[in-house]
Length: 64
Image (tube, rainbow, N blue to C red):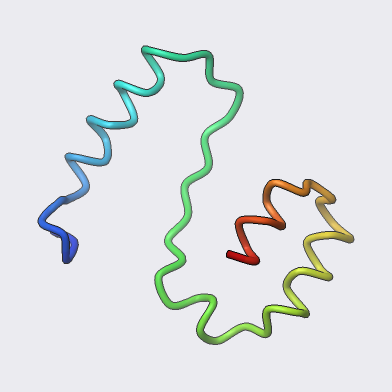
C-alpha cells in the first residue's frame, strides 16, 4: 500500500529504524487516524484525553 505522497509502509519502517538508532527512544506510538478526527467531536475528545491521560503534548497534537 502506498500513500498519496508516493511513500509506503516500507519507507515508514525505514524511517523508524533510522530514528530509533540515532536517538534515545522512550516509547513508540503507532496509530492509523486518517478519518478518525472527521467523525469525533474534538471538544469531547480533548476533554476525554485531558481526564484520562493529562499529557499536554498529546492534547496539543489532537488540537492541531
